[in-house]
Image 1 (tube, helix red, strand yellow):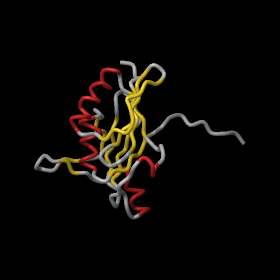
Image 2 (cartoon, helix red, strand yellow):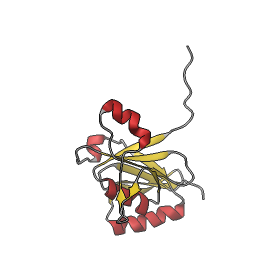
Image 3 (cartoon, rainbow, N blue to C red):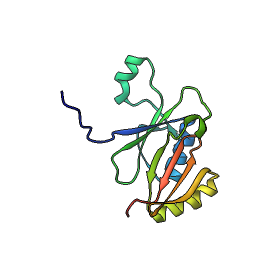
Image 4 (cartoon, one colour):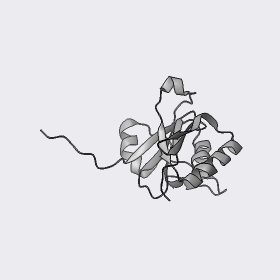
Length: 154
């Protein structure tokens, strides 16, 4: 029997305590784009909802969390923010080095450093030099461990 050959990463799920706060962090600070699902209420505020695409799982499981799908750059890999049923606090020691890593251009890496200080981002390590680039580790507002480097080409 042969082995399978996966073709690509479809999406990465990141658990969050507060979906709206996480959206601001990933969209307004990291520059990701909202890909869905969400709807706007009459007052113009976003209303997170369960997508009809998730109906089979929701019907089968009896529950489906609120989610927000994001994309970064030209990449077709989605980052899916998934609201936790119960908020928890995390730190890197509890999760070891479980993290999500992103790449930016040198210019965007520098811009992130400036904006992250304004936002009060909790940095853990870096920036440190690594194979001709810089890498840093920080936490999103929900304690998820994030890595960013400046290896991306324009």
